[in-house]
Length: 183
Figure 1 (cartoon, rainbow, N blue to C red):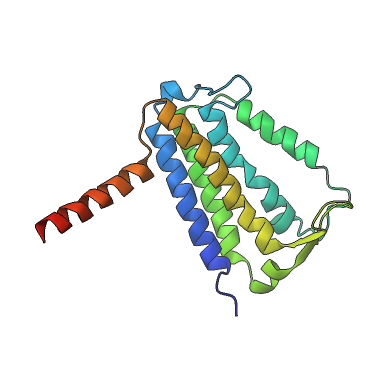
Figure 2 (figure 1 turned 90 degrees about the vertical axis):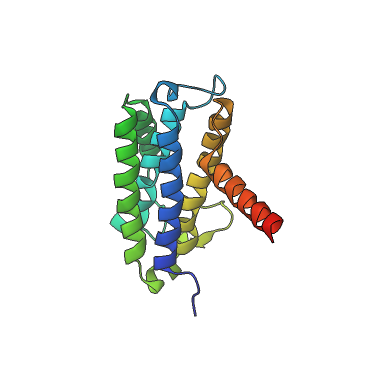
């Protein structure tokens, strides 16, 4: 029995993307060019990176249904993603890209069968582990977004914005404290 399948994977991915979009909405457009260090992506580039990076696993798993990476040109795809990050977009265009790309990928996840998620995909020779399941590889897309979302939350703090998840937690703590004081 699988306790976490395609529907749960898609739902959790949608939750992560919803939180990313909230951050994208809260950062003022004039701050999308903010770069926390010279070698870092800007806030806008990070958001575009998140928006387009699911294209690689969509290609690998859903379009090409690869069982290994023999002959796969990772660097060509990475160059395309980097080029996408460099395209100047408005805040609304980036948010639209996050919404449309997120829902497209979530729909792919939702459509996956247990058999599909259980398939092993062989990594290039010398990589450890030598294989991973599609499930693990697709779960890593959400983990990748959460990694970059953590960077965006740090950027928010550097810009003087308290991240929405922190504000929500603070509000719940205040409600609990008020309820305890009134009991």
